Image (cartoon, rainbow, N blue to C red; front, side, top):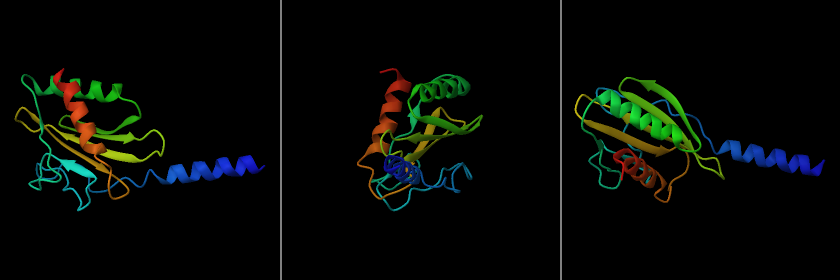
Length: 144
């Protein structure tokens, strides 16, 4: 019986790490949401150096780039596509051990680039996890 309660407590603690899905996600007037003041977010649409990251670039057809990025995301572990439209993807990435959830958004404007925003739902620092994730996805997308 004691083992059961220990397991139940662990499950409850781990599920609390997911946090609630933010309500400010999506594209508003051509922009993804701003990063909060905490260092656990990166965005290609900010002027703030500490949160800034370059957008992805591509040549060719926007639809092909969208499908290529979607395939890459689907091949990554612990991902779930939440919202998909012709120019937007919202993906949840869940950490393996603590089950922290990060919201990652991709916006495909009419020009050949992909804006990205990656933010932790909980906590203050992510030890660079969001930036590393975006750079990892960029490498896979560019084929390097």
